[in-house]
Image 1 (cartoon, helix red, strand yellow):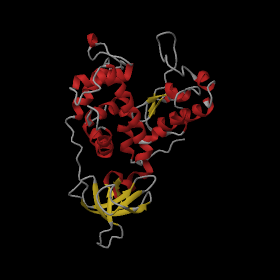
Image 2 (tube, one colour):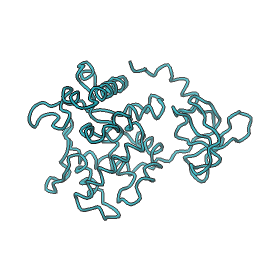
Image 3 (cartoon, helix red, strand yellow):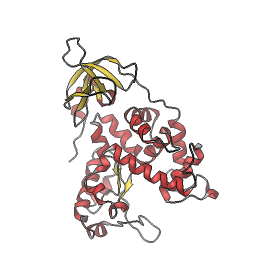
Image 4 (cartoon, one colour):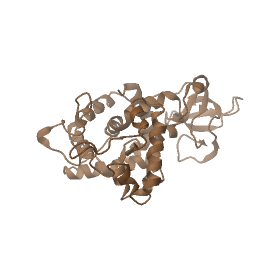
Length: 316
């Protein structure tokens, strides 16, 4: 179950990107967080504790291995099974990606043992917001190029689906939504429609007996209690961005990048920016001189990082 601490972690890493993508919509950050919690919270809430690089966490946010089990049972959308996926152009390449994604994720997240044991099983949902493989026919490059591993790309797809839900419910011109109205949009996001007579009891029903709409409402309510603000204490940290972390002249992406600090680089955090607490001022040489600013979410305490490295299992 996603906790307050999990949501705080998610907001610390992604709030800025979410806020930048929402102008012109009636949506807010907590609404997007609720979707992320419902779709893959059970995955990233586990992975975040493994001290994996953030881009690795994003790449492992995959799921849904249910195949077609007959009319009205199991998966009804394309591809219903491995054979139907292989029959499509580039289907073998897509299966290889989807199968590998399942194996990689299952090395960290329990509950997929039976799926992995079946060589015909593969993932159907990709990215933090779980874009479904049914869209492979229309947009194969999104999956084949693994764009779902990039948060901005998976967020854009999520917002596209939510906009369709807004239009379906006649909310496209609204500047704000109540929480219950958003849950209706989220149900349309999940099922393609919304029946007012059924209220929140719509969408996928999980093992606890709760419907998708009810889960979204619960996650939204919980997210509204979490501000996501955290200030890094001064001290020694390690760069956790796989592609490196840009050192900038000021606290923001509008400042020029002076250099890129490689994954694993150690540095001293001297202070948090008074203008934006998601940026910290750093000393690269340990000589007391200030070198610039980096985005705080891609730093991990050096002592914690070293203590946990040997405990992190590597996917087979």
